[in-house]
Length: 368
Image (cartoon, rainbow, N blue to C red; front, side, top):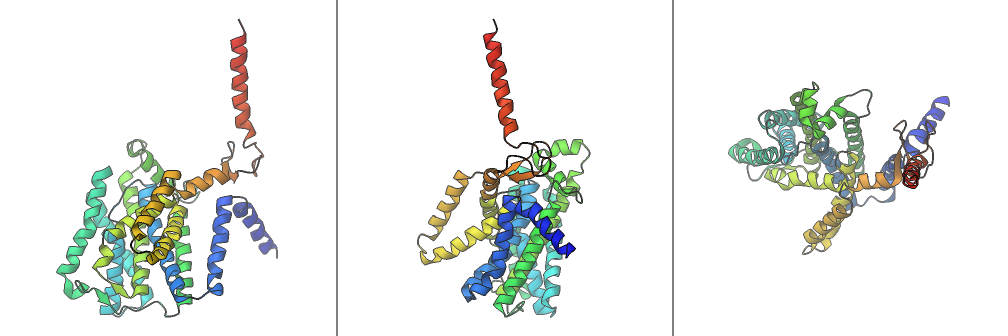
């Protein structure tokens, strides 16, 4: 009973006290209860793909949002894992839960192969070089059609489970685990991993980070590996849900989609990638009922949100609902007057400083 009581107190202090975490907490609870309300096959399919694409978008955020490496060829990692998992399952007869990790590992190797020659470049030059790799891999797929299936791709890949509800819960559990892992690895305030603060330092000013002794190449390779691994997990899940792997998995839109989702939700947050997927993907599916206006409306929504919230939805919500304590740097609800930990005033102190400055300037003007 004491353990349960401690856990409830921890939830109250660490989750409910912060609006952003409270929203995420109730959202996850709602996700768990959706199959109890409806088991419509089409809705289950959309939710399953949303879980998979949330992992995929968050993996790009590790590389682009936190490290500042604007990779436009992220679809290469997704496609490598999809093909590897499909080939291992069809050609060698390996089970699903051996194929997906193997595909993720192969995606890491592909990421390192891409990173080693391209990390010497920066900015738009790096982005253009990374954009070429999915195109190169597409050529490899066509060249080795005996293994990859060529234009027809691979079909008949073993599905994870035929029960859609069970498949939904599996992908949801994997999504939560992967997102939490990426969130912990990139947390600049983490007391366990220093990766997050180093990646932010590289993002802000790589030259300065190198000057203070940070091996920027090693950390960027590590970021590439982490990003490629989780993109590979998403690719493996995708191919064992859809049961098809083809050249379409390497199309450029597979590289552009995670960028759009992450920019829409908020870069450098991990949560922003998930928000972007869970808003934009179902919107895109709903717009199938107006096929002639589908892309136009979709693009209009993205442009409108980015113009109103340039840093993304998550940053905008945090600015409105949360306040950081000026003394202990702990996040509080914006409705609170005092910090929940140290008791320091959250708003009054700033106003007092401005008022004191204005009073001092008024006195100085009155003194002859």
